Structures are given as C-alpha cells and as structure tokens.
Length: 238
Image (cartoon, rainbow, N blue to C red; front, side, top):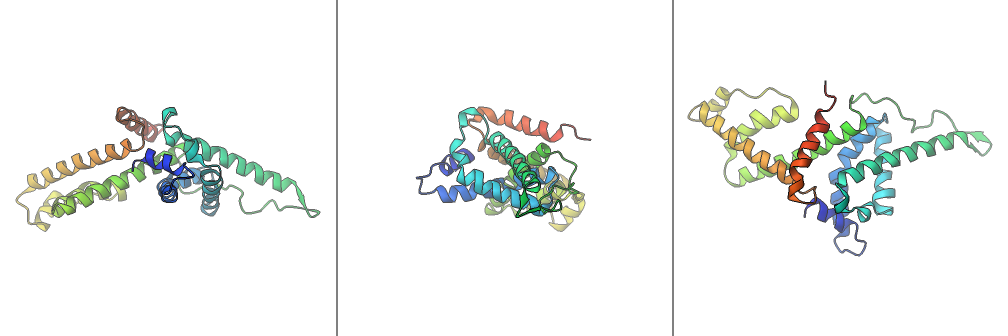
C-alpha cells in the first residue's frame, strides 16, 4: 500500500481496513509532527500532548485524510499546514484560559503548556518537519535494502554499506577504513570492498526514490519531490 492509497483508505469511514491504515499513517508521520512542534519552542512533554491532540482532534475526529485530494498537492503540505493551524489554535486557547477567571480566581500564568525555548535544535518548524520527514523515508529505505541484501545472502555487502555509508550518515561516526573491513571479512582486496559499497549506494538510492514515489501522485513527480526535499533541507544551512 502506497502512502496515497493508505491516506485515502484512512479517510473512508466505511472501509474495513481503515483502522489499520490510520494506525500506519499516525506511526509514519508522528516523528515529523513531533519535530515541528518541538521547533516552535514547546517542551517535549507539551509537544507530545499537542501531537496526541492533533491526532485525536484533526486526523481522527475531523477526518483529515478524508479531506486529502491527491490532485491538489502532496499530503505533506496538507499535514504541515494543518499542524501549524492546530498549534496556533492551541496557544490561543491557552492564552484565553489564562485571562479567564475560573471560580473567582485567575489561572496561574505558570500553568504547564507555556511554550519554552527548545534546546534540541536550531531548525525552524519547517526545517524540523522536513528533516524528520526525510529521516523517516531514509530509515524505511535502509531497512528495505538491508532486508533485501540479507535475504539474498549478501550479508558481507550489507556490512560494508553499513560501515562505510549508513552508520556515518545516521550516527555521524567516521567510516571504518577499507583495510580494516578487508581484514575483518577476509576479502580479496580494497577494490572488492569498494565495489560492494557502490552496489549498496545504488540500491539505497533506488530505495529512497521508491519511498518518495509512494508519497506523490504520479512517477513524474518523484524528481520534483526529491529536489524540493533537498532544497528544504539545505536552505539556510550554515
């Protein structure tokens, strides 16, 4: 099931598989939603509460997937706009409660829920949302390649790809030197290890494009989406 078929199924109240599609949709898009809210200055606990409220109030109760139109743009855009509107409404409600006397008393100005500066990232909300959106795509692509290589008995090739590409990209660690890998896996020489990495890069690139393809309306939009995501990730980068 592609992202769009999942989204459309989640929006059909009479679909027998709607519950499963909603669960998959929420699990898939929770990380970028949480990152967006955190980047607005909310604490981790408030961000968790806001995303839970967004899921309950907007995705489920207002049936956001049912309002998605694949002919009007990417679901990412609809989700991005919706969580932004929800946060603004959330903070307006909080401010209103602070001004309104409750049983003759004014609510404390220190109530939990006041946004505080985030110390987790310097990204703005759009950058945070996009980075975690891409991270979600990347994790799924990596798992696809890993499973494929292992199923084909290509464990050593995967170990090379993980040591030279995946771990440095995900964890920020230095790539293990080729000479160490050649010795560890009793390989012929460094060029053999390098060729394994080339094959892995190609497979991972194809898997990433396939994941992007699941989020757009047609194959013609894959390149545009990839370029758009890259632009958003590198825009205003130091």
